[in-house]
Image (cartoon, rainbow, N blue to C red; front, side):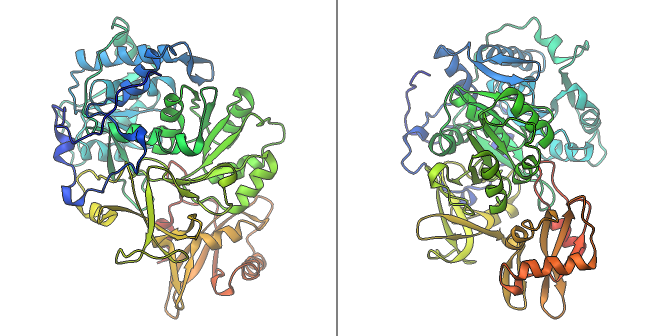
Length: 555
């Protein structure tokens, strides 16, 4: 990739004609401090379009014939991805009348056309609002209303609910000008038909580095999703922090993973990171553990991005599947239990790279790889970021103390039109993630709990995930979640919701066995005084556990 001239970015005037994002940005006093902590790669120019940086840069560097995207049934080179996104960009401008700053909803599973549409929207100066295929009409309507969207590009197989959502607003009034365009279709109204005679070339719109590029909606672990706005500079910054300094991919790597591209974890791991380093990505429309492990066997990827539960599940599927191509495995979305880390390493020889990120921060900001990994610890601060532990009043706490995790760096939280949540998340310029952590003397961060998952029982502070980690070591336990249940005597008691492995039954005898199992491994006051067996745990479409729903059922 050719070296591009860089200078420290000031705050350029927005290039957007549609000023919705700027108009709905949090006030200046509630914005996080953004800094790049001395990382030279993060000094981007004032004018920056991340689509140009990622795609055009590879073409100009003579890498157009390299494979960019792989998928069951074929592959696309960088040149094919570039030209397809150019054709779609021409459609957006000429046929669909998209102007810079317009929000465009994008819906579909992980496939090449989803990726091409993502880049095309950014090329024309639009704002991508990518949604997960599992979202339903009500959820899509909420997103369209919140971001004031009138155009959607959808995979034709997932179009029905999108069509219904774009007919009306939540209050039942007509959505004026609403339009849904299908792709991966040969119908007469399809995007492919509109693209057919469009030129292969397109001049990317020159956006400001600070213009909003995407609005990512949180997956709703605590209720209704919130829109988070990230700029073109943010998009590039996450490609030049975690992957460059921790993951360290090469152009020969093949990335794979399970989350949908609407999840920022996947956006980085399955699109931004491989393309930044000239590598390729394996896009799977179905990537549950049975499909993912089969694809690893067949396509021989080298880097995998998925969640702890998937690694646990795949451990039981290794017989008959060759996963020896994997050299690096990344886990995020939830804390990685030591038991899963050890089980995967024993079975494959690969140490899982744990990490914490957030939709509000765009991607991973604490992690460690290789010999720097300490099982059980999330890791150290990723270069480019700063992190610390603070008390309830925002005061710094010394190493060894448990408190709230505060982080800042080149990315930060900017909620769409949500001042109340912005005040909670950003305080004194720092992003407060809602996680309780402990920092040791060596700079490693150890996850304790979500701050709302800390259970206070009989005067003791009990971290629910700590109890979960112990329960997961028991042979009868497939999955579990631990929350606080109101109790008149103790304030709260520890309650465990447990999904058993198929051959076990939820008997009173097993309850006692599990309670004694916990008592023998951690302080006895932490054991679950209440146990409920269930067929499944409530999760978001990205696999995150929704403990708030369990707390609600216990109250």
